[in-house]
Structure formats: structure tokens, C-alpha cells
Length: 216
Ligand SMILES: [Zn+2]
Image (cartoon, protein in one colour):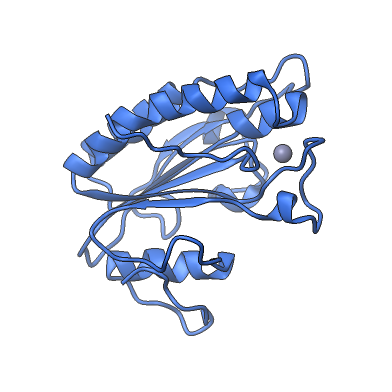
């Protein structure tokens, strides 16, 4: 089993992207927890209508699965098990032969807000995440996907993010696939992520995306 070492202690919210190459039309799946409306096909989010949908004709999300985390708080964090999220992604990949999937889990973000990062609870949460993800990572690679694991922000020693502190801003990125990337310590701009994914899919990169792909 691969030791992914998937998060460092300053990484909180994890995003995972799976992509399959060389398709003209890119079908995608997404499921997200406690997200803003930008991740949905419609707004406002309707619990019954939007909790799960399959819309193959949509130009945005074709297969959406969501968990709202309604009622989230320090004591009751309302997060589903990550193994369930990984299983849902795998299920959709197999059923719909997805070209692109994005999974967004809030487990480590929520844990980081509650316990902060330099503690046994977070050591354990990261180890559990690592252990749950490793076999899926191998399975997705065997299904023909490339995988990016990263976070959309860091988290400081008091559990905060959204500010300018490097601990709040910096996140690790792991890539599993055939392409080669820059040396390990290179700082990648977040703006490079979207054009990189499009380039790996063989899809057209819009002119408005001016940052350069970091995988070749
Ligand atoms: Zn947060």
C-alpha cells in the first residue's frame, strides 16, 4: 500500500481530482460538502432536488452528490466518513465512466478548527485519512485515472484560515500519474491548477487562463 503522506499538518480542506485522459467531451462528477453555490448547478440549493442528480446534458456538473453538513458546529461536526466519499467517487467513475471527478471533503478542516493542528487528535485524523485513501488511490490508478490531492487553503495553529499568514495560505499538492512536474519544493500558484487539469484532459484552455500548466 502506498504511503501517501497526503496531508501535512497545515493542510486542512482536502480536494481531490481524478482525471482520465484523451476524451473530446469531458464528463465530470462532483460532490462537495458545505460548499458555496458555485459548486452547484442551481442556486439556492434545494435539499431534495439537489442532494443528488444526474444531468448528462449539463455543461457544468453531470453527476452531483452532496452532503450539506447542515447543523455543523464544534461539538457535532456533521461530516460523513471519508471512506464513504471515496466509495461514492469510485462508484460514479465505474458507472458513468467519468473523465473528471472532483471530491471535496471537510473532515480535516473541521478537525483543525476544533482541535488545531499540533495535537494527537489531528495526528490520528491524518493517519486515518491516509489509510482510507491509499487503497482507493491504487484502484483509481488501475482504472486509468491520474490523481491530484491538494487543499484550497492551509490552517494556522489556532485553526484559522482566510488570512495572509503562510500557514493559512500554503498547502501541499500530490500528483499520481504519468506526467512530470517541477522539483519538490517549487511553489505552485493556485491559478495554475485549472489549466493544468485541462491540459491533462486534452481539453482546450481558455485564453483567460493565463497561468501555465505545471505538469507536462
Ligand atoms: Zn475551515
